[in-house]
Length: 150
Picture 1: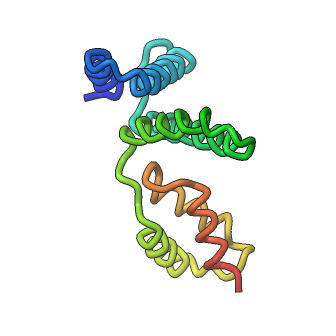
Picture 2: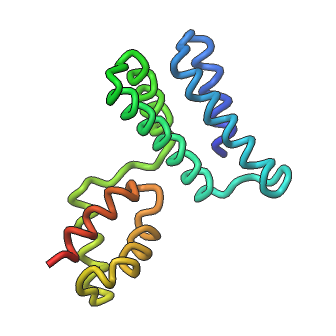
């Protein structure tokens, strides 16, 4: 079942339950998906990879907004953003634990023979491909830096 079909079902359930927070997050996802569909090739469906990237972008936007609101001591505005990020994250694949990410990065470093920060781009490219949708790019980057720094 495509993301759009799943969203429609979830929207109906949220409407019945009168869950306004979830409804708002689901409408944001649907809007973004429809915009992405029409922006590229008219009415062509998005690939699963494109859907995951779109969902990750939406989660990141919500988390960044929440962080800004917290810096400004506006917890009343930060809480809904965090809740929406959680709702959107439910549509993403199971996220890897930091330990699992480290293990994959160790394998990539061993396979490429990376030594030092000069090889970070090579390792990041392979790691990002290997963990697409399953790990946050910032987390991957942080772990790669730790591993490659002497």
